[in-house]
Image (cartoon, rainbow, N blue to C red):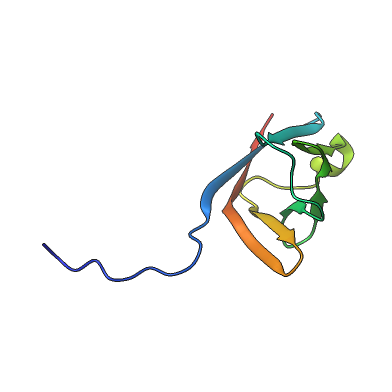
Length: 99
């Protein structure tokens, strides 16, 4: 059996954010229990950051079409999690523009 080495750290998931031209972007991430107090979730590109509104078990991204339409197809994007001293990139990918 080949040695596959040792991997340390968080391996971000693959992310694809689908934006439809002329439409608001809305997405809810829901946990089985409440998000930890002080948590922030953000979708981050080189030019913009969209923060989720967190209440109870839901983290809701709600972005008006006027803002969402400024993000081009294939723009690199990341999902960031921050709580206290924990700052992690949970997912990395690109925007997929429709319409």
